[in-house]
Image (cartoon, rainbow, N blue to C red; front, top):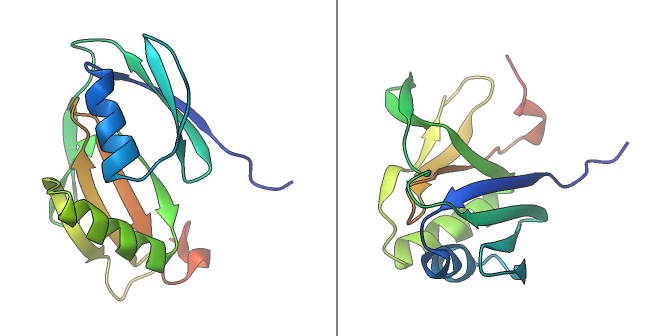
Length: 139
């Protein structure tokens, strides 16, 4: 079976701010929308920002490799060149990183490039890349 796109619906408190962040800063094409929600093409996956004031933002964090990782969070695994291009794009947009672009687990199985940031509603995202994609589930 080939890998199919996932769908994720998440809360935001301002659809215009979500459009600026996901559409402009992240470069995600907009799909269908209404007064209450907007679809985005998140690297081939469908994410939907739903207007739900007061429902988004941080809940907790877990200690991973010396960093406080926001929980919950969502994201995507990109190729290394795409990850580097997005990191540059987000830096140019003035993104405030919760964990700046870095290499985690260096020299270990699962070594990865990662970055954490929040959308304007406070939803946490992690974007990562592996030099060797076969390490995605390495132990």
